Length: 464
Image (cartoon, rainbow, N blue to C red; front, side, top):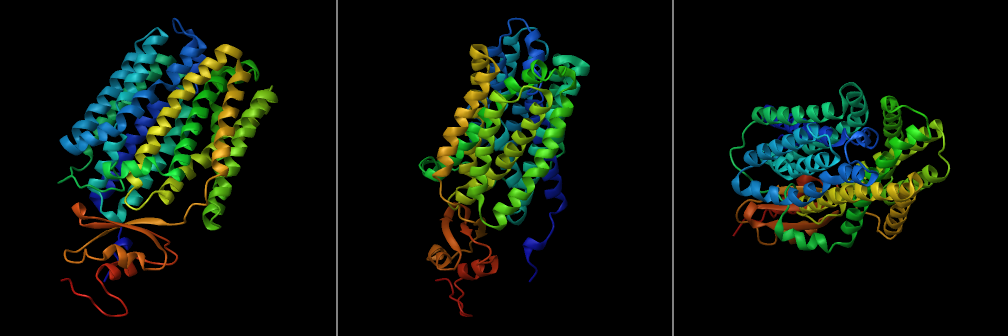
């Protein structure tokens, strides 16, 4: 029998994954293109202060964090497409409001409205509806890559577009990308039915367990701090390049491009080492320590252009490494059938961190200048480092969802847990499926399916 996991995605799955990855990419571009330019160009807005600039940078995170899970639940009830279309329209309206505003408060309200277009959970659920179980991880990886690529492009395109068209032109381009996202959604295949997959949605049954899980809470703290530091640092770094580095704001793009590219290449060997040698805790702790060193370096030693460039290369090496490894750790640590819920809480923590980071960075700059911002970020890093040191080495397991034939439910979980390498399993009757966490080096899918059918040592146990 041909292994279904060896098959390629069919045309519908490829079209769905490609289209939804593009929607994510355009939306994230719109979110992040303002990050490297708002601190410098935003001071020309009426009523602008450093504290309000910081609020504008992080404001989208408030509504994004608050609404993404409710919008996901709403999409279960009324359908994915209405929620996604509405979210993109709200996002476009927020960008248009910011584009037409001459005051900092107009930009802040526009950013808050952008965040209210919180469609991440609904898009991921639609992807789950449109892909088979054996290809879902691959499709979600495509979306993950699109998010990473869009962040890198945003750091480079933001300064270039703002240089050519101004801050309002940047927001108008963001509006256009949101409307283009609506056209792409119209091109994405329609799902025949909504299917509940606990690995890609927030399941209310798993929420309490997730919120009490000490290891997951450490990772949630990590992504909260990481994005708080990112937003706070970008209140200060563009200004540092101008004031201490003497680099005109129109030329910042090459610094971000170089730092991101070198940082991405530099982090790859550490990811490989952590996964191959099963030393992800060591990689995580080392990355947080490097981030702490970077913030102290920015505060105490980086006083010229090339010293700032060096610091940013190290900063993005640590940031890219943490941004790539944290979701993988959440997937490893989450209980069977709980990855979707764990990722929902994780994403909410990320956006709350972004909101706090922008506001904290702006307030610290207004109170004490660049040094205060970097020292505040260092303090957050220290808190995270202490939490990371106390975490356990994560289990090196993967998640798998297996359909369960009628009649074999009794004892299914016990049969799976008896296999070497299986660390967790849960039966979900409403899906007629079992979710399993396993070490794929010790147990394969064939052995799991045999155990579910009651087969052992060549014997077959028929359903009663």
